[in-house]
Length: 255
Ligand SMILES: Cc1cc2nc3c(=O)[nH]c(=O)nc-3n(C[C@H](O)[C@H](O)[C@H](O)COP(=O)(O)OP(=O)(O)OC[C@H]3O[C@@H](n4cnc5c(N)ncnc54)[C@H](O)[C@@H]3O)c2cc1C
Image (cartoon, rainbow, N blue to C red):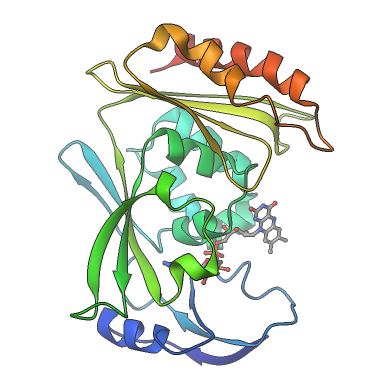
């Protein structure tokens, strides 16, 4: 239950509020406004100007409070990223849910989280406890997933950065075309040949299957991370079989 609501006008003010115990950033609020047993205060981010998208050289800077729908509508988002966003949440949630809120709450079935892991997204974190307060650290998304309160305590994601000079692909197997994945694969390929493959569909966070310059081994890499990927949706043997196929399709369709 939300006990106090704050709407700071500056990042400094927001960080000061977030340094208080039981105080959380409020993005779109789609998760935080759900009924629950915990009592906490929220710091609304909407007045901080964190809702901007900006191309900076070969990167796209995505403000933490950019909604999923704004990113989906952006001319900078490649078709594979758009597909992954559409599958992560229906339209009403996409209009409210922010990129940071979605990553913080994402689990292994998040198609958006899987795609951003493949893209090797960087998160800018402003820390209310640092000296001086507000010091911003840039941390790779893969080092943060799955987000936990203890990891974020007092910190605010201000920006997420993804590369634009990459080929990307996204492939999925699900019960229906709009359902959450039983297995999905996201691939990003840099001009240097560096190739990253991430898989989603199970567990607490998407899984990185490959990051290297030997794309020839991509199917084996995909299969290797599925050996314990069993749950109520599919056996590890099924995912292992499908993972190689999706990885191959990603290689063939990357653009
Ligand atoms: C009906 C319904 C169905 C849903 N179904 C799903 C689902 O199937 N799968 C799923 O993954 N989610 C689901 N959600 C959850 C939710 O829609 C998404 O996770 C959403 O995109 C969260 O974004 P938000 O901006 O609304 O987050 P908020 O609710 O504002 O915040 C979520 C968390 O992120 C933290 N946070 C937000 N912004 C920042 C920031 N800048 N820095 C640090 N921490 C931050 C908050 O403190 C909080 O802990 C559902 C929600 C609803 C209401």
